[in-house]
Image (cartoon, rainbow, N blue to C red; front, side, top):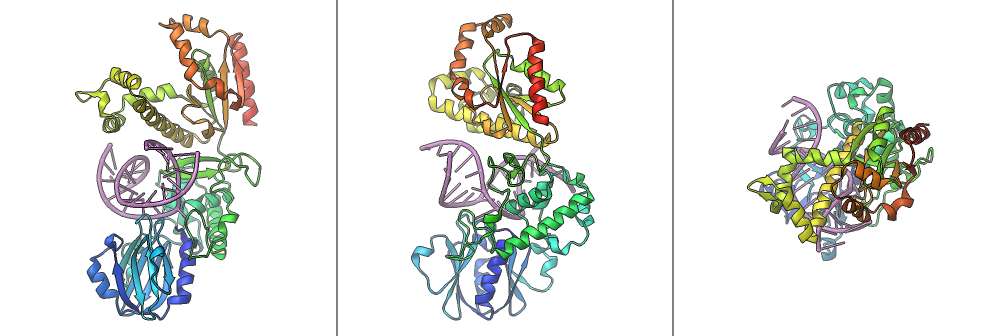
Length: 462
DNA sequence: GCAACTGTTGCTTA
DNA sequence: CTAAGCAACAGTTG
């Protein structure tokens, strides 16, 4: 579930019901959540009374008698339910439950089984793991220099800086995107390049976003509810998370999504100063490379998918992964491109999964390229843009078309002109042509071609 | 039916 | 040392 507001909401619900109660018994059907011997855990917790609850970052803490504390981290899906009795239909993900001294039950449910709990001596627990790894919460940070100090030598992007619990505690993926949106800061800016003024904005917005979310009882997204039949309301206020491909509430620009550190990151390119990205597609020998060259001359960061794939085949790490997934295309430990072609032709299933595998690797590469070059217009040449389902990843898509394809192929000394022409039938270009934002016609001189590129470029940077 | 995606974090690897 | 990538798991979505 939860980021800080959801944990705080959970804390308030439990506070109202469980302070003063004593643990009567424990049932552990999956011990993986308990970070100590589960027998000892049971023995130690039974008979202890709950004095109070507290929270450190995303950790929820039960303060117990006899100097002990139960420390819980819910990770993705962990949650407590406090119920009158055990009902079998409620307990499919309940891996631990506690019977309290009033014969009601506290259930720990966790469909993904990531959550963890610790039973620790209360004294000095803030100075020991896991709590010692938790930084200050945003309202306890009075000076933005605290953040700058943390980010000083870091080479990660600011989005990951906000998720770094040792730097600032409590933000998760949803609220980090909200804070960046409200602060009008690119998620992809390096944390060490954040200015004092920006750090100030980030802190103020972190406080605002988290406090608003707590007031609204957290966000109810996907499966998460603070208690049975109870929903948070904060999801109604979210302006960034989950709004990719929809219009920015502030400026109307289409919101975009990229990945950093494996976390989906939604932002408004205009408000958050992320340069537009362009996908360049077209059939074989339509003049894409010429167009790409022109974009480069204009100062854009450019890359072609063909080059990316070429790079992949010369990387040890890629070959290793490929070998694991598709052993049939390796001969005596070496990649055999003839075997790839043979398998492609013989086995439709192989072809499908091989193509998807390579395309998703390209997709990841392009994502990282765009993230690293967010402050420049990026242009990526992708012949199979639509087949690889990448058209949505760009601000703009443009196609290059020519009537002189055959001539260009002959001029290029292509071995089999007819065969090359035929490949176009399967490229998906014609069916998807109407989705393109802009079409460049390559039927005249090179100067004319460049002029069209220049016009497009100046349109998008204004 | 497969593949990608999901609110988290810590361990392994380069 | 840092930082990326993966692993833990199970459900949902396209």
